[in-house]
Amino acid sequence: MPGTDLGLVALSMARDEFPPGTALGTCDPETVRRATDKIELERLAVDAALTTPPGKHITRAELESGAEVPLPAIVKAARTRTPTVDGGFASSAVQRVSSRDELLQAARNVPGEAVLIQPALDGELRASSGVAWRGEVVAIVHQAARRIYPPGRGITAFAETVPPDPQVEPGVRRLIAALGWSGIFQAQFVHSADVSYLIDLNPRMYGSLALAVAAGANLPAIWADLLLGRTPRGGTYRVGARFRSEERDLALLGMSALAGDWRTVIDVLRPRRRTAHALGSLRDPWPLLMSGRVARISRHRAQLAR
Image 1 (cartoon, rainbow, N blue to C red):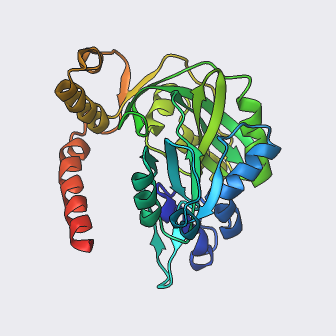
Image 2: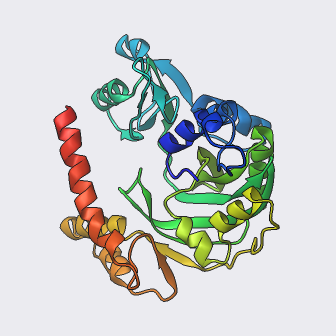
């Protein structure tokens, strides 16, 4: 079961190298390509009657020549992982830009000749996550992020499960059906001015997966049952389950304290019962203890690569 985009792509391309009878948690390469293509996602969303931010697919040369783009904006690579000439893959983080100089620099950091630019929407980060089998959604969980890091463009720091959104769930089911997807997925939205805008699709295990499990929908177990030909159990979920990413919440705590945002500081420090954690566990503390070391090694390697 792949847990990263790179692992998803690599496993799909190596399906024939595994012995017969091996249960592989991935789709065929063409389906994976479509599921990780941001431009394709916009087309699929339109067909599924889901709303997306008005995007613009534009080359770096056009931007350098003075093409106008409304700011602030979000800059993305056209694909989650962009193939390189040496047979590898290049990636870049989603970037929020507020000035022309930031826009041009962000475009230079994106692999490939073109970038996807969307308006920066202020709103609540939401997600519909689940498991599908041959295009049919078997289980689905809805969540809303109460805190993200970095603010304005980040990833979930604290979230909770919410009731199904009747305006969103049918469209997500149509999107997954159009892909013919089998496996875990997460469709991400920004809810702004009473509209939920689809901003991304993670066709794999994702960062806040522990929330679905804590809410009663053990998505990895359901996926494993489907792969092994068993009848899955536990497809429903409990509203009000909570999730905390220790690393991101601590980073947000430090940022908020330095900025004098005491409301956020108090909110982060407030204890919440029945909260699932991304890494922290009294039964198994090593993932949390080692996460800082892994982050330092990653930063050191990134500096050496520059």
